[in-house]
Length: 220
Length: 397
Image (cartoon, rainbow over all chains, first blue to last red; front, side, top):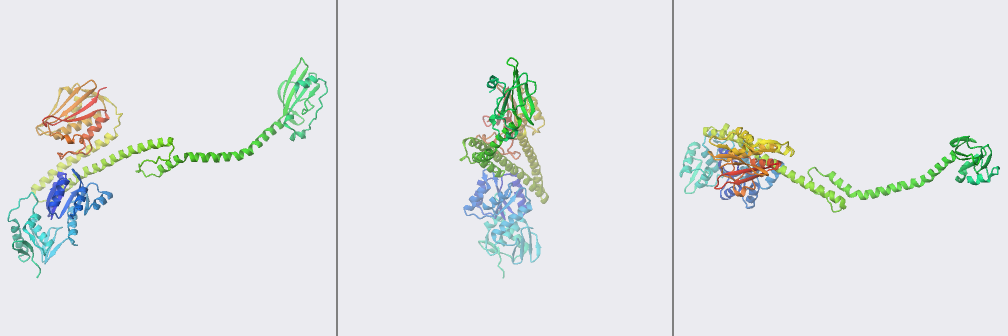
């Protein structure tokens, strides 16, 4: 999951970035409305965590601009004003969820996963295909009920492939899900991670579509 | 009547009808007053028609109450030895009472009719006249506590419109004050909750991570957050205190050198920073509210420390004019962008180059405190981007 955080408080921003990474997300950050809007419109994020009070305006305005441009990226509002009226206003402006400060890291993670799940039309939190079960909440994977230990990147690749098992994910696509803006991407990183992943879960699950990318091998 | 009786002097009592006592009920008020003239040797010389034949009085002159024929008379007697006569004038008390009761009875019936009518009239006129006032009272009574919309004055008479307009003016000011308060609370909530969220997240990271560098970073961030929150809560308390400190705060002679050196000594500063108190401060003193001035200068000092370069100078100095004393603190930090100079005094404004420890309250506090003691605050960027110069001008009485 690739997540954008728009927050102007540096300590909180750092905490969100590190905390959500620990929960398995790839995190990018913006510190004001202008940068945030630009990032959401030019990049594909699975979800956005948006602060309401930002130095160059209100997060609600950003939200309205975004929704009126037709963008449906799931957005969780983060704010100190969490009375009922503010919550209603936030949700009516187009937010998918609302979390008052201070909050719990685990809860934030669960809510972010929930809005992503809702967007994708899934009812359960776990992703399953062909005997492979991945649980984003506990960061665990099992193959035919046998638990498998994966690295953060391997987990992210498998999760991306499992979200849309029939469609092919390109290498660029996978890189986007794995690395934030500031992270250096080695040219063959995806290949290496896929190789390791196959070693751990078995050779038969991930299929290479030559010249295009990867996908979960269809059931026989 | 008396002189004509006296002059007749025949000695024969003027024989007019002598009414018996029963005729009292019908006796006309004209015969109410009776008069007798006696010679000093005891003969009745004359009497008026209503007067009894017995003497109305004893031997004394002047007023007296006498019982004559079973009735009480009020009599006045006067003697004239020259003419050898004594004149008695009197009337029956019973008749007097009847007069009074007839009068009362005569007035009572019309009064009984007129008084309620008058009351009704008064009530309706007053009611009509006071209706706008009544309507205003009902409007005010039915209002919710937070409803400060203006009163409708379109139908009010001029004297009431004046009152309503004054009330509306008060409502407007109250509304503005409440709005400021609401904004302050909202901003305070935001400014407090955000660092607390950061603190909590960093603590959860420190607990959850197995990476040692990550844990150390988180722990450092926790310390930073705690510093920030404690500074912020201190300043919020200061603002609350400023709002309660009245303008009539007791004033005393305050020596600026003493005050500033006290502030400097109990404010921790980064090592390497030089703090200088110029000699001009020593002679500078002003009669003012010490608490308010201290709040202002302390915040200016903290500001200067926070924005100074690591090896910078913070310089305090004072200049006197005939009417005022100016206390200035200079730092050599980045200064304030010209576009933000007018905004920095408002509560919770934090500039683009905000420091992590700033609460956005410091200069707002200084501004409020200085205004309370009739002073003014001037912020000037020193030339060549050489830092900020903050000057407090205080009137000298």
